[in-house]
Length: 222
Image (cartoon, rainbow, N blue to C red; front, side, top):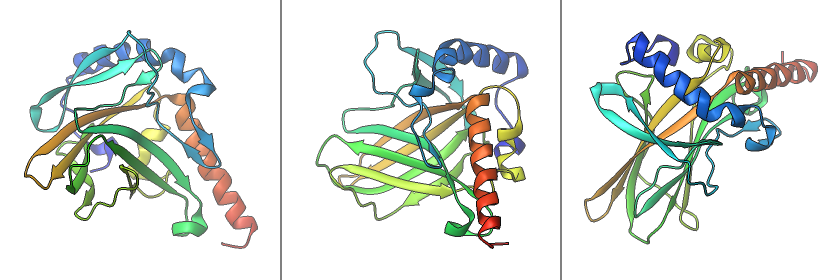
């Protein structure tokens, strides 16, 4: 279900309070270009592994009515982790038209780091906020890790399409992704990762998509 069509589980008052809290935490990060990784057409969400004692746990009501706590610090969302897994990325990439299709594509890129050598048999990633019901974005039944690192992507289509309408809306856009990691011994790690995007981030993605389209047209793609 596209985020802009998704039914949020917050009433408006709860959403306003949560948004003000996140804005307070992430204001510095969104105005500081050094907090984002920008290479070619890639912009990562503000997962930061820097050490800080000013970490807050923010309760968020997600798909299905469950309330989970996500971590954030002054420079952005903090990686969700437990004894065996650490989430290292919930990022957006803009792929040029000639790589996937006739229009640019918005790719959600997810990554994690295994802390142990326990064999992993399956990894799923779901959008659980603002989407309701939860939407499975990645279901990897044969995960391959390189040096303990796993990376996968979900193509969410044209950045300027209806399914990505949130990019054209004003204000902070928070997302929560549920990572479920299945181990060979039958146990699981379930982690909820916060990702946030401000107006500057949205403009960057849209400008990158427009520039990619213009280059494609100049090259004779359309």
